[in-house]
Image (cartoon, rainbow, N blue to C red):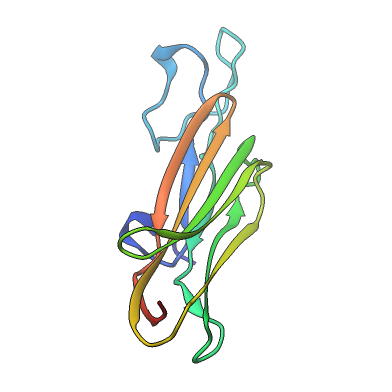
Length: 159
């Protein structure tokens, strides 16, 4: 499966990668660049490949036609063989004006995971737009990276 940037709103997983580097600012790599796997004079180890996870925000939807509940999910679908130290995944189900549901996955070890929220509609008379918005934060040996990623906007009968 090809990875695409989540900022494009793709439902295909995107990869958020961290590059590990020594503490010396002269040796810190540019974001997204790989560094070689060897120890430097200070004893710090550089990692040859990016470290990170693939993730996605799934389009919100109703379980059944005419159902009164809107569901949304975000997922970490895969992590590199050497995963980040910690990950923090959150989900928001939002309409264009405000969030209607939220869940926090808290800081945990990086692995496959799914967060799901639901919103119970008061009635099914009018249409509203909904979007799933996820955030992923990662930490590896003190280096941090985070990303906010939305799904496509979906119009559903729900008020």
